[in-house]
Length: 240
Image (cartoon, rainbow, N blue to C red):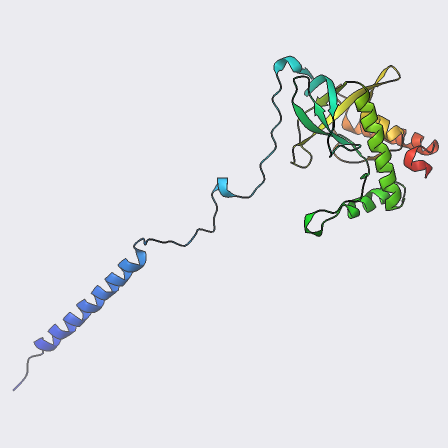
C-alpha cells in the first residue's frame, strides 16, 4: 500500500509556522522599547562642553559714544583687583559696571612665577617672554613684569582715563581688548605706546586699526620705531 505524504507535509508546515512565530517574537522583543535604554554618545547642543562665549557688558547709552567702529567710555577708573597686571586690569565704566580689559598690540612679562592646578605653571611663558625681550633671564623678565605692572597701575590709578573697545575677547575668558588713552605731560597718549617707550613690554598679541583709522600695520611700524628708540636709550629691559 502506498502511504500518503500529507501527514508529513502537515508536520513540516507546523514546524515552519512555529519557527516563523519564534523569529517574529524575538524580533518584537529586540525592537520594543524597554524601561532602560543605553545612553546616547551624542550630546545635544546645550549639553556640549564648549565654553560659553563672553558677552560684552551693556552700559547705559549715556555712558557711551562711538569713534569709528569703537565704543568709547570716558573718565573710567582703575579697580583694585588681584589679577591686575601691566597689560590687563579691571576698569570701572562711567555707569559703574566693572570689566576686565587687555591691551591691543603689547604684552608685558609676567610679574611673578606661578603654579596652577594640575601641575601647570607660567614658567614656559616667562621663558618665551625673556627670549623675545633681548634674551634676558626668566628672573629678569619677572623683574620687568613687576616694573611694568607698577608703571601701569600708578598711571591708571592717578586719574581717570578713556577706553576704546570693540568688545573682542582675546582668550574667550571675559577679558576684552581695548586701547587705553591716558594723559601724560599734558598730552593724550596710548598706554601701549608708553609701555614700549619705557622698555616695559614686547610687541605681541592682537593688533587692530586705531580708532582714528590708522591701519594696524602702520601702528606696528610706529611701535617698532619706539622700541628702537628705547633700545638706544637703554630703557627698561634694554638697560639690563
